[in-house]
Image (cartoon, rainbow over all chains, first blue to last red):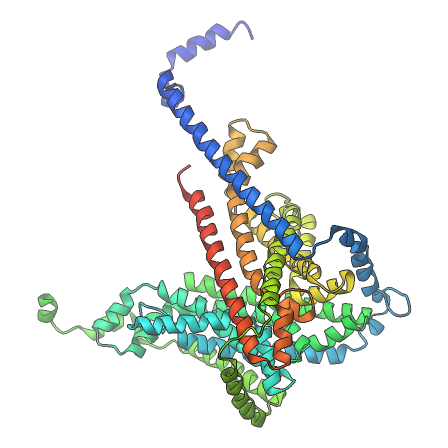
Length: 316
Length: 286
């Protein structure tokens, strides 16, 4: 080792200096002390200002949390006393009336499978009809809400406020009103989903339409196309894939939302579920919840697959 | 302009031979599209037949709706203004506390579900599926379950929002961590940082602003959800709204709806400004 050291040194000396080494050794330049002090002081000031900002934000948050806790009657003592109840509740959910675990006797657990499946089918159909109708209306309205395709600022403003109203009022509130007007059954549920979808999809649609490439639109306008033709041949090809993707996502959200519309009598599985929860039919609750989770997951996965395919095809 | 006017007539035939696909119809795609549309239409019509829509009631119900709307003006709190404002405050408190609580529990599990933290699918996928299962159950169902545990009142609402947010935020946190830029982590490692320093200076500065933005967005959207959990008795303004609808006090209904719209609008505005500030600080040169 020791003996060949000078040899190596010699070799290195003979080699021409590699540019990389030069760069590394010259990159670390120390600023003159006065300049360095100024830079460091500026850095410390910036860091201190950021820290102060963080402390103020944290203090505001803590005050807000305290106020909220008082307002929402949060009581840690009750919570700690009853949190055991939460887990024993799930324990009871998974127990049959006979005292056995639910999975030991699937036939007994899912004794009302036929009825539940029919009601879940009804729930999905409600979401389907509501979403599709909502998507069609939102499709028609979104071009009126896009300033790049519509001339009048008043039209844009009015359409946007209307969509805002439709989406801010929760669908279950619409369902409550419609149940009073149309009576119990899936119809008020479908209408509620429909109105909420118009608002939610309309917003996503016009945000897409707003940002389309305007060159095809200008080209068609220059060639003398009518408003409808401009939309059909310039705007539509650009937005259709993302519109479909948004509608599929909304369908998934609506299936999940439709499971609770039955709470207010607007059809679907919700009515049975609420009854089971309120009357403490534990194994029925878990059976319905398992079905809901399975259906929602299946729809989540299949619409996710469809959306990825659509977007992938639109990009290529 | 003049060049175009003086140009010879466009040779359509030459264009057709060059860009054949643009001129001939793609029949296969058309048939598939038509079939999909027909199937969707059939399902649509079938649904209406299955629902057995009472068309007569649709008509009378519509005229009733018009009457409701006419009854709604002018909005009037009917002497319950203080009660409604208090309930609105309860709703806002539920949304804030519920979201923060959900985020608090979602954070550690979200880290466990991220691919770049836990590469083993056997450990990671059960956490992901768990999030999906929790997310698949609507907030209102959670509210009913929590009412059974802690009793009626806003506390059940806080826990319901926290539970359903736990599922949604956990999945989101995992996705954010997965999409974080590994180069910053590698940079810290290359300059001799330990594992903890990698997380603190490489990963956290990237993901924290995004987390904060998402939590703010959830508080915003939960203000909407928190207005409805009162329908099943879990606190907030929803209880009063559902009650006034059931007793057909339409003036008070419209007043409460306007109150909700104003509150949601105010929260939207504030959270939008805050989110823009957080995002702006992030994109500013370091």
